Image (cartoon, rainbow, N blue to C red):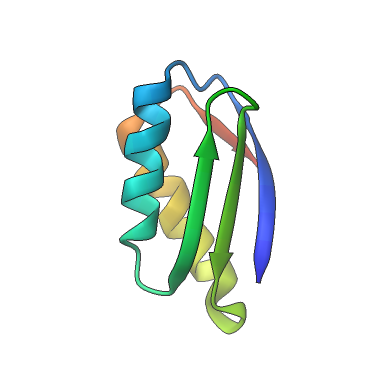
Length: 72
């Protein structure tokens, strides 16, 4: 399942790249893209575990950029 999310308060392109790399390492994630310019994130993950995977994505993003919010 592919879903797009709007990001709020993502401060730099470097943080976006770090978030993208961390998300791609999560078990069950097929692909991810975090765009600083558009303040959007795309996550492609297993359908049956999507909610569980998204909880992990939120945790990973908070570690990299504590002020950034994922608008679900």
